[in-house]
Amino acid sequence: MHSWHHNTDPHTISLRDTPLGVEAAAIATAFAIEPATMAQRLVRAKKRIRDAGIPFVLPKRDDLAERLPAVLEAVYGAYAIDWQLTPHGAPIESLSAEALHLALVLAELLPDEPEVLGLAALVCLSEARRPARRTADGGFIPLDEQDSGLWDGVLIARGEALLRRAHDYRRPGRFQYEAAIQSAHCARATRGKVDLNALRKLHRALLRVAPSLGAAVASAAVDGEIDGAEAGLQALDAIGDPAVERFQPAWSTRAHLLVEAGRVAEAANAYRRAIELTADRGIAEYLLRRLRSITC
Image (cartoon, rainbow, N blue to C red):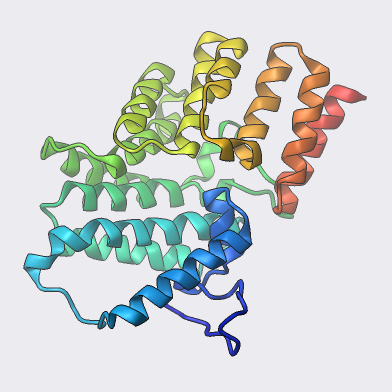
């Protein structure tokens, strides 16, 4: 799963100097940092591997406890990045398809590892919604506006079964909470609505075990739905990570909450900033429509 693109000039940083065959710019977007910074990190990581003479060997069973977290992160990272890179169309031979395959293989090889099961459940439940994420011409459809009838019921059932198996071990972790959050959203297909209070508990549990910028923004959005827009905005303002200023989902969420709070001028500015930070044409067009709806 590693594809390394070497530079002819060691002093030149290539945006293709990256693992998983994914450009550093895409990885940087996922981590909300500048592409050049991510490229530099990748170059340094390669140099450390080269200088240390770390060989490529198949791990023994005794090595799995130490290596498994990095493997799970790599599979999840590949899926998450490809989710951004290929938002429309069938994922045939894509990184998403490979990530799904690897997650399920890991679940078969390590059926007694709840975080492995959690990752497999997470990818299944997320991938199940792919058919409803876009219009026929690539337009973006927000999760709460998606036609749940288009979601893949087979994948949802598989993900739910994996999540139940993970839960039986009573050793919760990051990927299990991530999968449970996706399960709460997928429940709309059968129950017609999402249990927002359960969703908030899951987001807060996730923030305790694996705090991240994305999780904090998503939690703030749920607070806004339950407690009102001002509460959601307060939660956004409380995020201490400076990267939030260039994190596109944070600005989209802020814009939505500002509209709900009746602060139209501020919402328009937030939409403009979100559009500036968006490389995806479908999302940019959706945000532009939202901007026009409050300014025209």
